[in-house]
Image (cartoon, rainbow, N blue to C red):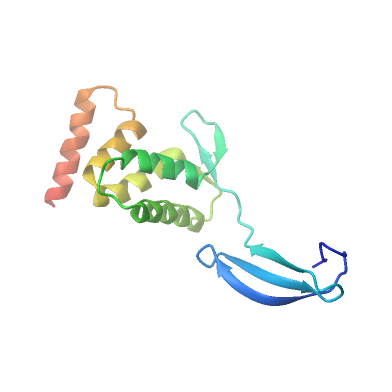
Length: 153
């Protein structure tokens, strides 16, 4: 690693710490020539996940976008931010474990709804109403009936 101060090619690592839930490493380094100290980060290079939308368009997966949708669905509900983050992380881990770089948005929505239904039913219905784009009240009622049947099992 080159020193950003004097461009000398030899530096030593003073300290290493895992960050981002162990997915990255932060290193404090010192130049062996000028003693300048600086920080570097080492991250695993992940293959980008691509979401195939309903119209056939493709876009890069965004955990932040998923988080915004979950936060909106859970607004004014007794759902902790940690639960929302856990759902987003679980979905991303499942997507990466599939071994494919492209996933239809429908599958991602179903993965989220599966997890959200056990966390908060109102948030689940809110998310489902946006995700499934209910055309009329009868479709909405059918979804509620399915939810009630699932709860009774």
